[in-house]
Amino acid sequence: MSEVRDGGLNGALSDVLLTGSAPTRPRFSFEVFPARSGAAALALGNAVQHLAAAGPDFISVTYGANGSNRGASRDLVKYLRDHTDALPLAHLTTVGESRDAILEAIHGIMDTGVHDFLALRGDPPRGSDESDPAVAGSLSSLELVKLVAQARAERPAFTSVGRTSVAAYPNGHPLSRSRSEDLDWLVAKQEAGAQFAITQLFFRAEEYLEFVADGRGAGLTIPVLPGLMPVATAAQLRKVAELAGRPAPSELVREIEDAGGYAPELGVEHTTALARELLAGGAPSLHLYTFNRHERVLAVLRELELLAPVGV
Image (cartoon, rainbow, N blue to C red):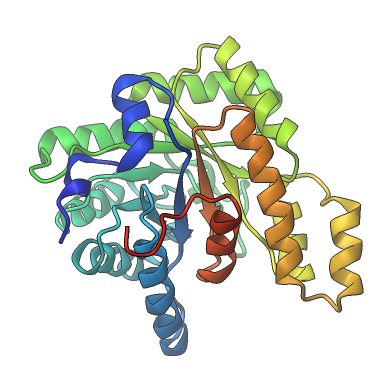
């Protein structure tokens, strides 16, 4: 097993975090989520092996609202740690959970040897909303960043430096009243110990580039990784548009619908073009939402010539 990941995040992104210098070559990372069935677990295992072999800076693992995927998330994080050379980054959410339960979850993940986290408040569980007292009383993502720092102080890492990342919203958080409020919140998380941010999905390069430029003006200094997902179906495109808070490009919608609702090559084409614009605009790395499939995200990276030749 390679030891490179034991110092924290791999590759160029680690250089950015440690030195503040721009990466010499664009890098990438992936997101996966726990499987919900035996068949899905087999497919995920195959995908993870391909993703890990690509040499990402990290592979993040999602965590369900109210701890719904806690055990499965921790198992997947441990699998990545024990059976691949990829650095796991564990998602944490606070919605509907007590401070003690969250701290217990953090300690449980640390006990697997993983100390890198994405700190999120998270979405309300199905059937709940912000009017639910259990949701409204949840710790904020800022408080979670501080709680992770507390946990690290209680259990210092012996095999990993440990990084904390947070979410960023180029088109605004659903509960935010303005971009300035979004950026003030992000800067506060930076000051609390967050070392980089990963964005929610978006469709147009200017959405990310303008957000980052405004962030720099507001005092944001941490790297901001653009989150991208090459969709395959019309349903996925609608879901991404919902998450992005913006309509999908009309031409992409029309082309996928004309293809019968399934056109993975179009998703790869759109994401590749978007990634080129982002990298040209200064994005330090790409974070690819895989939907637990490796084919499309690796196709994007091949088109961008970011994958090392076989055998290297």
